[in-house]
Length: 418
Image 1 (cartoon, rainbow, N blue to C red):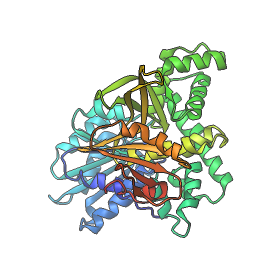
Image 2 (image 1 turned 30 degrees about the horizontal axis):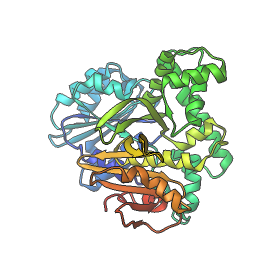
Image 3 (image 1 turned 30 degrees about the vertical axis):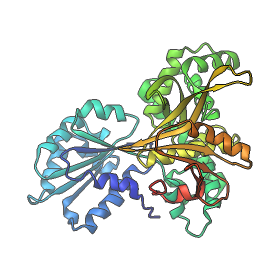
C-alpha cells in the first residue's frame, strides 16, 4: 500500500543538491527505506530525472554483499555515472559498508553526485552522524506515521474511530497490513523485544537487562510526569528493591533516546526565558510500542493524548519544551504566594511559537478556567491554544485563546498556521 508522507518527503526535497551527505535516521521499521527508495525515487522520476541516474544500493540484500567492500562500491557507483548530469546515490543500511565514512566522503568530492543514506540505529545513531561527518552530513530525522498519514490509508473510516485505533496501536507502517488486534499486538511486542532491545543490548554490551526493562516500564507508566534519575532511583529502591544507581539510570535513558524509542522534553521558564535543568518529561516515539510494554492495559486517554500531540508537533518540525510560568498571587489572608503553573507544550520553529495545552475534556466552566490559568499568565503575543478531544467546533475565545478539537488538529497538518 502506497502511503504518502508529504512532510518528510519535503524535508528531503529541500536538501537536494546541497553538497552534503543526506543521512536519514529514526526509529527502526518507521519507513526510512520506503521514504527514500519509493517516495523520493518517485519524486525524482516525476521531475524528469532518468531512472539510469538514480543509483540504488541495498546493503542488506545478500546480492549486494560484495558492495560492502569499499573499492567495490566506489567502482560500482563510478561505472553507473554515465555523463556529467546529476546522479543520485541511495545507499540503504550504510553501516554494513566497511569504512563507510571514508567512502561517503570520497563520493562527496566527485562532481554531480547527490548522496542519500539510511542507517540502522544499532550502529548508526544521530550522535554518530554529528561526530563522524563533522559538518558534511545533513541529518533528516523521520518518525512513525502521523495520524493524517495513517488516516490516508483508511479513507472509508471516520477519523474518530481511527484516532482510537491509532492511540492504541500507534503509527508503525507495517500495521497498515495487519487486520486483527491480535496480529497488531503480537507484532508490536515482538518488534520491541526482538529488534529494539536487541539493538540496545548489542550496542552497549548490556548483559543483565532486567533493570533496563523495568525502567522502560516505569517510563511507559508515567508519560507526561516529571522525572529525573534521583526520583527514578528512589522508585526502584522502594518498589523494585533494586540498588540501581542514578548514573546507570541516566545511562539507560540516554540509550533509549539514542535508539529513538523515547524523547526528552526539557522544562522552560517562560517569563524568565531560561531552561530548567531538571526534572524532565519523557514521551514515547510511538504509542503502540509504549502500550505493548504494558500489555495494552494502561490506556489512560489523557496521558496518551498528550503523548500523541507531542509526537505530532515533533513530526511537524517543532522543538517542543514543557513550559513553566511563575505567578505571584495572594492567599485568603492577603499574604503573597508564588504559584508554579505548567504549560504542556512550548513549541518553536523559526520565528513561530505556540503555547499549547492538552485537555482531553473540558466539561465544565471550572475545567476551562483550569486550562486557561497558565495561558493567561503569559503576557506575550504568541498564539495560545487548547486542544481537546471534546466534539466541539474549533473556535476562538473572547480572550484570544484558540480552542481546537483534536480531530481538526490531527487531520490537517497545517492546522496551526491560522
